[in-house]
Length: 344
Image 1 (spheres, rainbow, N blue to C red):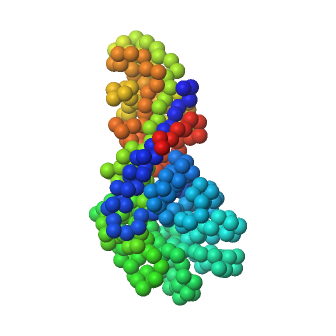
Image 2 (image 1 turned 180 degrees about the horizontal axis):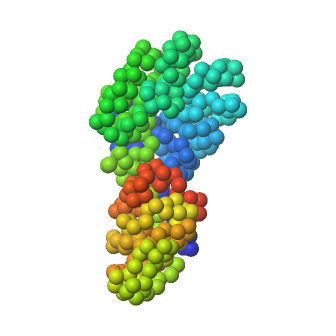
Image 3 (image 1 turned 30 degrees about the horizontal axis):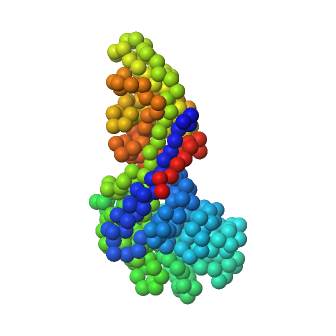
């Protein structure tokens, strides 16, 4: 194995979806945007469709087309960015449902695809995407007469259960949608975990499916194995890597492994994380460079051929915390240089 290897456990993915689905009495969809958080929209969507998912969510129409190709006709595929300029052919040819975000998109959709299904995305306070309350009030009767297939909004602070914004958005969403006949959705992973009030007609988890917080009960979906290129012996006082940031305090053995920030292992991660030889932790030392990471393997009884940086002991959220970011960013930036394998 000369390249780093990314292994995606589709069993664990399916198990995470089932576990989240069991927490509600309503339908559970799945967010598969950004190439299923970097893990491959085709295999991921196929696995989830086999589990019974009938509502998928993507960021843009091009992603929706790839998911439709993978899962075939039938399930709903909704596009968060709505009906963008030039999207009509993709939406029609791949049976995608744009989530209308503005009066302009509503007009564009009616002109380009007058009988094609659409959904409505409302801004309940996040100020990111969706119709403002005033715009929705002006459009509502026309939109409802055309039977939108879903009406949804998105929570800004659902990963903080006690944040007052959650209740505020719940109240706003209810005020904006009470009496709507279309299925309603407010909750992604965090909202699903907030409890039944937030569930409405269906939930649409994303990061929780892939092993990330705030779903603390998630099984790890991703493992990353890094091949060892070279192991060298260091005397006390010798340094490792750019900037001499690590100095040997004892006679040490340092393994150089093939991966770095070009592979989504952020330079900011630095120290504070481990790689693993089986269950034995080996600390990362020195700065992560573009293609290489250096690891202290002094305490191993053998010279390893590869070391694992993502596993059940160390999750995407552990790496994210060390880098000062979030698990989403780690997952979606795991690059194309990995050889990829799937556990079916």
